[in-house]
Image (cartoon, rainbow, N blue to C red; front, top):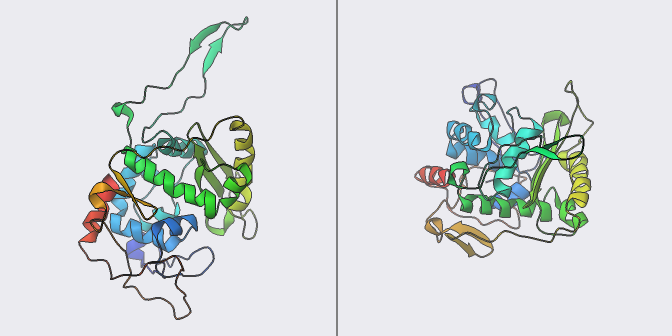
Length: 295
């Protein structure tokens, strides 16, 4: 449910919080795919609320983020933690690598004055010792982020690069202080951040899609020149039903069907045309959401 939310200081850890969507509108029920593509904050917050902020704080460490830099409050859903572009690239590489985490290194080779190689650094083999998330999880997330670059806030990416095998997410902090785009191809991950050393506004209504995405596209135009289109194959244990991917065990009504559909909407709200309505989520669905999150 993409509807208004309000949290008092006891929930947020500081002051009362009434989050908004960037465009200030609420569209009613919509799929998680559509909400992510359109950066609908209310949907992300509801999902984190059901998963539990402490569980999410622990989970992000699998991607190389520091738990202490991401306090366990619902503001995590909107990126309230502190990260560097290198950390963000490390995290997104988990998806590009099919669920494996590879720590970055900045020196690939050392040579002598004649160009002879003295030492070379190679990434570790991708085996279960460096697995961060299940391969199915990585595939489904990649498929969701493909929608962002196809029809969402980063649709310019596929339209400009003229290829479907690119994935990513725009990001804009409050008051347009930071503009982000983090994205990848199966062979390359890149993160673009624009902001000031001493944080201040970038300008009125500046966004990650408007500022950082063009930088990322320019880089990828060169990085992917001559690289063939390569979309990942679905791992075993997934089903595609009506264009959406499901874990086998959570397909056909066995998973979480809805969140917050019993919450009221403002009178002026119109429902998203791509939405499916249904009964309010049952309390036991919170446990099922947590199970999905862990997998």
